[in-house]
Length: 146
Image (cartoon, rainbow, N blue to C red; front, side):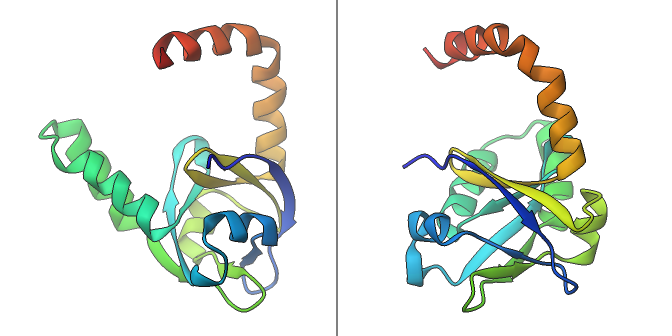
């Protein structure tokens, strides 16, 4: 099932992010005890279940292109495994919070096979910039997807 939705969140003093119960249930419920946190595009972070993270790794394995190898080094070196506590919180490591320039207010997004964490202000700017182009972007996406 594709992950969807937008949830305003706050990081606590320890840098923990609470993943909504509905999302945890979609990702595996009680069986989900860990999540991979990785640097992502547009100064955001991506959260993956272990199986989604492994699927991503499989897609990269077969490439010998220099750009892909360089990206893989940066991506995997920056990624971290986080444990979900009983309240469904995961601690975002300091270096990843710095990478994404996260303050206390963040937005959690469902984006198909992963979640993204954005600084609230950056997300609002991104939406304001791209919403007027929604139809054009959609046409290009559907062309590629068909």
